[in-house]
Length: 116
Image (tube, rainbow, N blue to C red; front, side, top):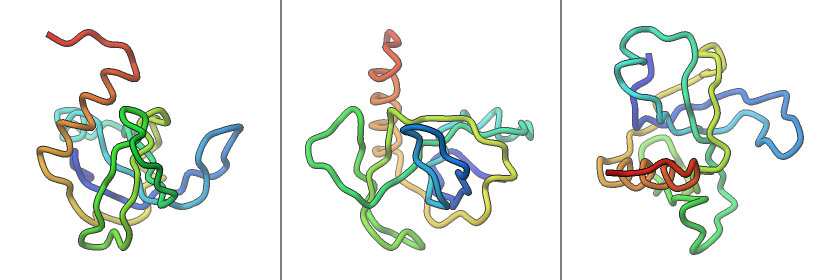
């Protein structure tokens, strides 16, 4: 089972409209409690190697590490729930706590959720 903060390869086909498609790395952003409970779907943000500078909070840079061969941007505005069967390989790497905090803040901003 995946864990929050891991990068996995997911099959996001078929794509629709502006959704990222193809088989690509995704960052697991779902709460660990749901993952531990064996929830049948997982919240992810797709990654892209088409980097855009200074695009926060829509994109957060994920540095290459482990099986993630190239620096990538997490597409925060493309967060989605996928069936766990779409997770085809992983984990490639695990991002650090600091980066996950940054991703969490970006998700709050993009979803316009109040922070205390």
